[in-house]
Image 1 (cartoon, rainbow, N blue to C red):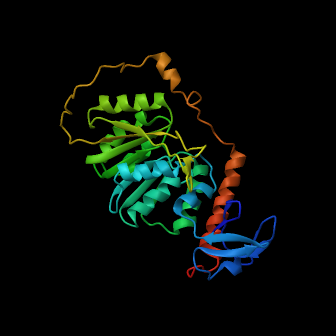
Image 2: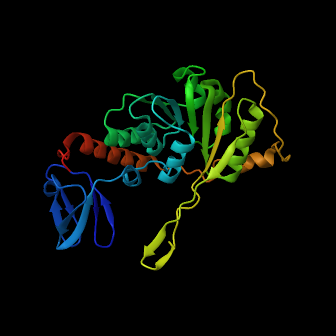
Image 3: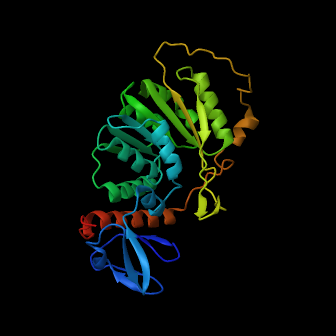
Amino acid sequence: MQITGPKRRINTIVLGEGGQFSTQHGAIWHADLVGLPDGSVVQIGGRDHLVIRPLLNDYIMSMPRGAAIIYPKDSAQIVAFGDIHPGLTVVEAGVGSGALSLFLLRALAGTGRLVSFERRAEFRDIAEANVRGYFGETPNWEIRLGDLQEELPLAVEPGAADRILLDMLAPWECIEEAARALKPGGLILCYVATVPQLSRTVEAIRSHGSFTAPVSNETLVRGWHVDGLAVRPDHRMVAHTGFLMTARRVADGVTVPDFKRRAGKTEFDDEDIEVWTPGAVGDRNPSDKRLRRVARDAQQQAQDLQGTKLDTNDL
């Protein structure tokens, strides 16, 4: 449940038996919210508060995180430019906190197959709890622990995948395995944070010979303040979070046409490789203590949402 206060502060809570939502001005029992029409206004400490069901992006922005998430603006672009629709076999690596998995599962609508790969058990546990908390059981989702290069051939038959989505530090290391798993016409999408990562990924795709020319872009979202004639851009915006690169798998034995393009530096020396080290691109590893805490929070939230929560079907 999403509760918005008089200063537009938004709180996302899970309704539970005997639960209470408190503010500095007063409190309200969770039971008093059950049965209200969606979008109702309630009084908490004599102040109006809007009560409404959260959207998926609201849930994602408030759910427990062990790793940085793919923001909704980028997830929306991935679903759109990746042409994710029911019935597909989709491969995702890595999972992180499960934000993109939630969007993909919604787009698949209970059909097809989503196979997700994660190298760290802590992230896997957090993602599983976050997804279970929102969807409950997801029989078309399989999450595998391990390295994509080793596990993908064991999980997906050659030529069986429709989409492969790579959110990892070095996606260029997995191009061969991705090409083998994709069917002709399938799509590979790589999500990377930095310019050096994008450069090397694009050149790896081009040099492989099994894909169409890569297309790269980023999405910036700028809100606007609109109040009568006072119309202006917001002072803050969601700017760069990552680059999206897409390419299509061509049929086996086909030579991709060498369309004219300006020659650039396509070879890499030791100095270039140094730019792509985990430390150089800002890779941060959260502490084990923090991950254990986030995993507990995610599992507790999933339990509250799917087990002990009140019946809110009439909300």
